[in-house]
Image (cartoon, rainbow, N blue to C red; front, side, top):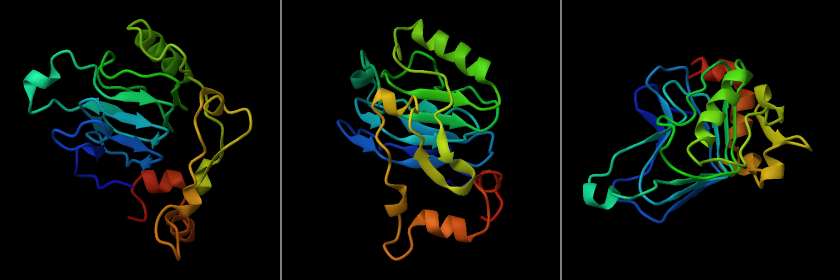
Length: 193
């Protein structure tokens, strides 16, 4: 869950290198400027879920160290699920920024647009084994982020995220979200903030 005011739900720090960002579930609000993850430098963004964004799911923040950025491929973006519930197919802000593979990109309201975007991305030599298909969540609306057997994400190496254990020990985040009485769609629309 992200505040509507920042430019992104997730952003690695200035001059942060060789870090791995793993196992996060980023849920965005319907805000036009909101990105999912703003990434830079040689880091790894793997096995995460980005669900809903306004501007782009993954953007690139320019380094303060311009000399270091020369020749940098950016962050390795691999084995993630990038899912938009409607029609936003701006999965990676600049199509040739960052590198990686084994991702699942899917805009539920525009499957053909998802496939067209991935075709353009693959023409840059990236995400050659990624797919633009439904990741097959168990019950996304009720905060069950489990992937069904046969999920294309699982066959690409994505590992189930133990979402029931994220948050406070006595009451994990998903339990509190369910107790709020809101669905995921209502949360993304800004209800129940």
